[in-house]
Image (cartoon, rainbow, N blue to C red):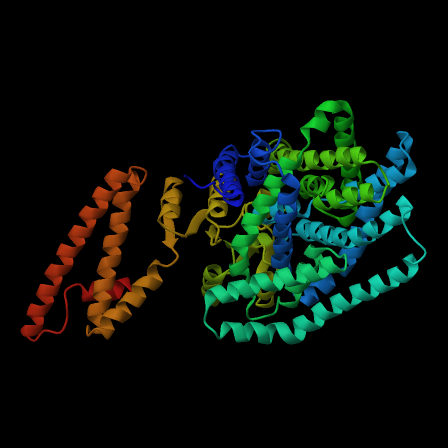
Length: 617
């Protein structure tokens, strides 16, 4: 008799299979991973194949992915940087929530809806999806940019604003009692106490605790401690009715200066990615197509109406903030959509008798549809709006400024780019630096580099940095796809530029050679050769012998790569070329060892090719 498969195992199999099949397909079509997750949720949900029916419980569990994401964002913000954002958070954040709420409330009243329903609907719809917005900004490297920082500040304010919104619902629903005032004071004391405990604990207890756990030298326990930290803070915040994500963000900020920051990021990142994916799948499952089909025109009117009204408010807000024209469409769409916290607001409103469950279901459906439409609209904006803007900017005359006189542009100023910049600077060669890491930018400026803050895949940024008059573009970014986009952009618009590119691995090297780039350096190749020379010396070879062996291996490896390149897409031919090259190298090295041994027996100290090896060094 066969045992029945547990429900949790069946559910896990369904979620993982849907994600593995649909998300790569979505990315291959150029639609992005978020649309893939949402589509996977629709396919397996109650209105698709019906493989999973309890979308609400899955959504509650998967919301922890948003909590982990805010914790990781907090780790990137030191307290002093967060303090510098206080005005954007409360200024622009307050303006967005107040402006969108006012416009939506007026629209609801004019449409004949009661003022209580209009107010709660406006408050809920004014909130945006933190999960989708931060995920998109992360994929596009927008978080360190001006528009990314502004968007993040507004999203953070929304998390704070959700607390008074929820506190307002019992008053609107008439469910308060005589002891409400005393309860409010007690609740306020609890909130202050929990926040104080998190701040003081983060300052006084967290680092010594993490240090003690790290000394156990048990990696899985450190991972468990990282998760325990986030879960415990989220539970504390939930206990007093605060946003779990806000508490996790606060904890991340307190640990941003910790020596364990990178370890925490590494441990939590995989869990964040999986749970966020599950969250988007759950959102797709939660779309109630029954409500949509029962009242399609009303649903369409609500979705289109609130998206348009929010977009107008946010667009004027972006102008007031001084954001660049090309940044405004993406900024507007990311904040115009509904947010996951609206689910909580509308469900709580129905529970407090502000409006009926049917209205709550309609509004929840509208928010879910907007979250589905938002990534699709972003794809459309990329393809039709921003591409035209880029082409029109390409035809404008260039503005020559003093920054454009630098003959070298370095895109990416991490470890690789810094070494190149220092060497060029020592030779008196000025270089312009492009990077989107705020800390790196500040450090580079302090050493006298000309720095532009932003994504080097943007044509307008390359123009402003002086690509039209520079001689050499050094592409030293970490990300392979970003590196290839920069190369393609430079080839298309700045054909005169000589490209020197860092290759992350063999595949990246081949892709760069396909694009005609000849000055390609594999990032670990030369360092590995030097380490191999040290090993040979420790095993008894003289420095000159070890140097000669390493240089001959280097020449052979470069020649072998050139022979491999035409066949790197044909696995069988590639393997044949590699085996042949390896055999030739082994035979050559064997002959040289025999010759060297013979020379040593004859009393000769120097090896053939030593002078050439010296020159190669």
